[in-house]
Image 1 (cartoon, rainbow, N blue to C red):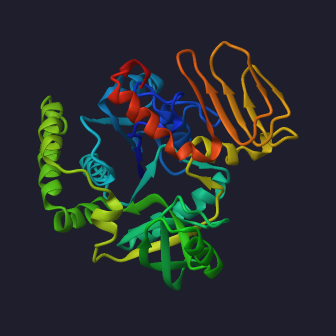
Image 2: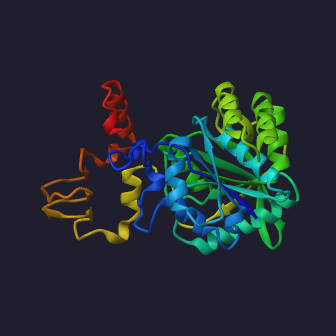
Length: 357
């Protein structure tokens, strides 16, 4: 089975640890190695290295070539980030160039999966279902009323290989808390983890119908694969195409059959420092603090203290705080506001402090 790992993005919500030169997917965020390597290693039972395509920003190509040295993965770089529809289209057309005719898994590089065996079982079922046609997405079984994720509403279920699969009724934007609670109670909604499985032809046919400009660009790229003109072709194509998410550009409008498979695998988006704090609950001290590096805490509660520099970090009486210390920048914030850290990065850009971004 071919897999496309989407490793673009700047990871601004993990500043100051995540920078333009090394965004979170290239960091050891979860304590088990670089997230992009974790993602590739996780799918080894289904995809050999030669069947893995990693798509990332051009500025991270050298780093990726270094950390994947000696492995047979294929690495493609986008000149500019254009959201997930162009990324998935590029992965589909390159998989076809490599001779892939069967289903392809499209996976973000910055997710954490606690129960890998359950995840692989559902992904394998998705492969079998996509072989029959249509697009399959994994629906993460929610365990709380989450307002930070989009949702997938399921329709009627049917039996497929002794498992229940569902048609998708609708994709739902991030809800308010009351709606999120009702979604959880109904049992009809799943978190949208942005994981898709489909044949390259299925993906490209839908892009042709729904995003014709992108399809024309992908055709241009396909003719350039395997020769010295690919970098120039990528530049030309990415200058013309617009950025659009695969959810909005394809999934919400497709006439193809769309299925959702429930997946209860301990999935975490790892989208912010707060989500990482919650994910690592088993590491809390008696005050529900999570600490990394040289730290000293006195009378602190529910805080995340990460000492990534060489200094001793001492905290007194903090509650629900985030402290991230790096050699050249220190972040102190309300832990519950960690989704808004990108605003700090935006202000640093405005002040032209590029060395800190």
